Length: 184
Image (cartoon, rainbow, N blue to C red; front, side, top):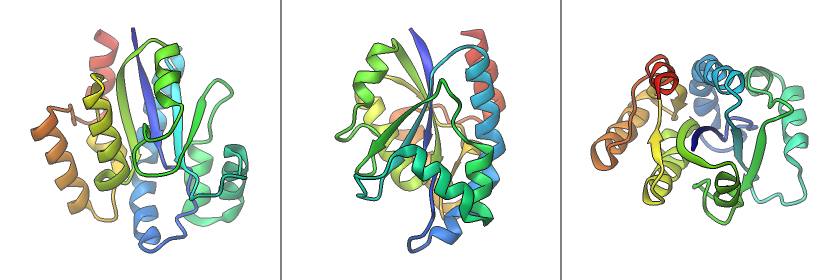
């Protein structure tokens, strides 16, 4: 059994109400997510990009990556820093949780994953819903506090506190998560 890294909704046009605030916060956590991704890639642990498709079922994930890179600004910066590698997986989701109506449970089972490190946006929405679903499914869950973002730091902090207190999810920063994963 091994861990998997979930990069949640970071490949994103941020073209919705509040998206500009979320993009500004998301840029701040990109380097930490990229560092975790590098650790996972180095150890040959799975990296999964799970992204909202905004109900556009005709769009491929690679199309979304390309559109984000061409968009400019924060959207392009994020997509460039976090562009998926050739061995990375992707899952398109219709709603908040990465587990809701997706192939994620089957992929995780096939990859013999027992632990999830969840990163991305928004801490108080999709990250929270995914963490709760993962917890209910018996996965060990980590949500590094410096690898998730919400529209405001306060919203992110409240969601992290809820995850830590109600589900005993490890919310320590990426450096601690990396060291802990390396020793397990």
